[in-house]
Image (cartoon, rainbow, N blue to C red; front, side):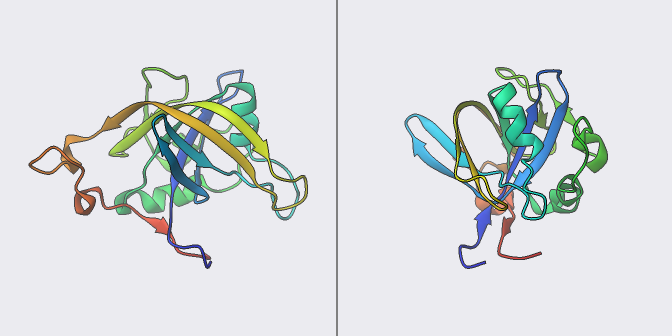
Length: 170
């Protein structure tokens, strides 16, 4: 709770069978602009020590999309964070619309005004015990920005973007 607020990466992935997964992660940020690199961390379960479907999927298909979360999406996003069995499509469970990506297999979240298509560069496991992080380092290869969030100069207006962040516990 002391490292806050944290932006939310709303990450979609696919497994080798093509099953789609969508999950939010607040251990996330941008770490380079040239090349554009983002990092997020799907930690192991603190209760069961299992890895998340997102982690397993990027090992099988090293691609993802990262979609920003606005205030208007936050309740639906929360539904997608529930633990569902592998193969359950969180887009459907949470009521989001899958939008085909142009350069990667995982779909984008249509309702998100800023979407990033990414190639996974590295998966760094930070430990093997409950709560251990798994650092996913990904290069952004394509951006998608809704004109609705741009100002008169064509730049992103943070007020129009209306992002949410995680500020600690539930």
